[in-house]
Length: 450
Image (cartoon, rainbow, N blue to C red; front, side, top):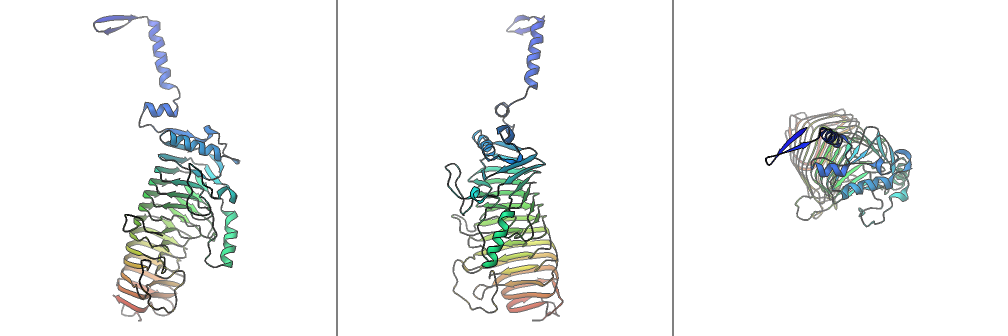
């Protein structure tokens, strides 16, 4: 007999009932628990929504868009959780994330975009507002909070079909960018994390946090062919508090491009507090700010990064009409190999005229100041670099400290004031190491020409 004391009374339970209760209790502990039950039974447990359970095939042939979107919607409507992609290739049209959602791509999982232009053409959906542009992105998130894309899998934009026509259009009209979809775009989102995944072969930009706050981008591998036009890797645009770290980037355009194409209400600077650390840049156009800076950029740190074979190293660029204030930029502990050039700071884009007259200042006049480049070593196949302001808006307060550059030609400094060189050497195989015009420069080596 089993005895239990209750308010002074003894209750006798037959032994066989005790055995039955134990069996039932054990089954309750070991049986599978649904995602919904898990969330209600344990507030800290994350709900898992597997796209295969919602009908995704993952065979690389079946169009899985409906199943994937249904999974994302169910996750969002249930208060959030993790949307899981197990190993397989999931062919899809554009999809739309929801708040409090983590997209998890397991090792061996590939989320593959279709390459049919009609699949990306803009048309408003009630639940999924379209971003600005001719095409929507492959993965979209608008006005969301607490979102993430993580795992060891791959998001592939199937860009091959788009790159040929884009290059042909650019050949016919130099500087023209043929409209194409982006890979991942977050607009107006807060608390964003993208970690460890591979982003590859976007028709154009790979990852764009636009007007976002508190963004962590860590451990990504971003790949596109060297000559695939406009395939920027990471483009924070009018965003704040962004950290990019430990990424390997090998693409056909800017490795990282910080942009600020318009003012944001309530902010002095639309784009600020951005850190890029411990990244490896292979092919690409380097670490850029601009060319759109009209909303302002400040407080950028680039640290402990290496560049190999990039067309540019550190580049700050913006023309009249698209410029704004860019200030408090720190780049340190940088190594560059076969980069051309190492340093580009220019208020002209895309080309620098040989001669120019001062023009009236406007809110869209580029104004670059408070730039520190420290502990940089570089080898350049051609030019060491340029620091070129406008006659009406000289580049101001630039410090080069412990900078060593070996190049075919020297560093041009024009329309600049308050430039200071500290333990800085440029070894030019042709001509003078420093070429100065309307420039105030302190600390020039005694052997440098003027």
